Image 1 (cartoon, helix red, strand yellow):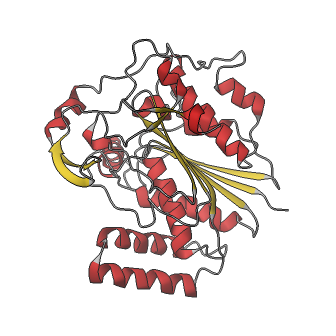
Image 2 (image 1 turned 30 degrees about the vertical axis):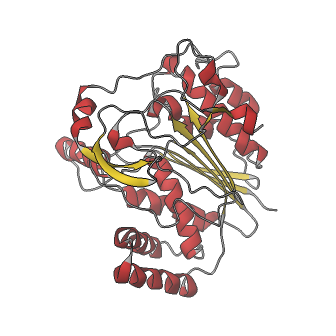
Length: 361
């Protein structure tokens, strides 16, 4: 009998703790039943030290490297791909969720499935090699080096990956372009446009102003089921991770994502979902338009706003280099915005914004 296989990839410096992201809350609320739905959770880069860094100083440096440069991101991708490789059976539906750089990880996994397919279970030693090939393709970008890497990928799929496996539902909260706080962004092959992903849902932060946290768009395509929705708040207001009493605003994108995925066949334990949404007696905050927005980025991030970064200009339809200087993210004409934005007292809704309820039910 076909099952659901769900991969949950958390963001940088987020792990199981009291201050939980929407990824771990969704994981908590999913049905986990052998034969019906298998669920995998990865805490994300920068949450633990790599093996071999046994001292306290080494552990700290390892975590900092994960946060700043995306160090060990490849290992996270290897872990998730291996889980899928060793559990997938023909006919299973694959759901991939992620927040922040965990969303980046989710998009890489879906792109790898398009490029390579899925190796037969038990081929664990091949997975790091496949990820390294993908990384080489991302770095090469174009020209002869890219073609050489692309040819290698085709040969790998033809020789090793004997199973087709496509992402049924890709749900991400606020994908950011940078692999790490300092590391430069990589262009993910088939990250913006992946013909094998059936359904895409992307929750994006309206009020994130950090230049290092530029949002990573999906390519517009009227023939595919893609919906990107803007929500009030900053990065963690949308993806979660603030102390629970301050996390009410993040429940809007969480509830939306869970509802969209459930319509696509995800098995949700509704009493548990009601619990994390604060709808039942439990120590969870409920969604409320008066919940706090965390608009101050902190002094350390404020200092980075003078660093020039590459930004997309929607009016000129071109890239440009400039210091961000606390600007709001660039928005397309008529952005789709969640209805709660109109209910927040004093909140400035972007000009030309369209309510989600008008375009999608």
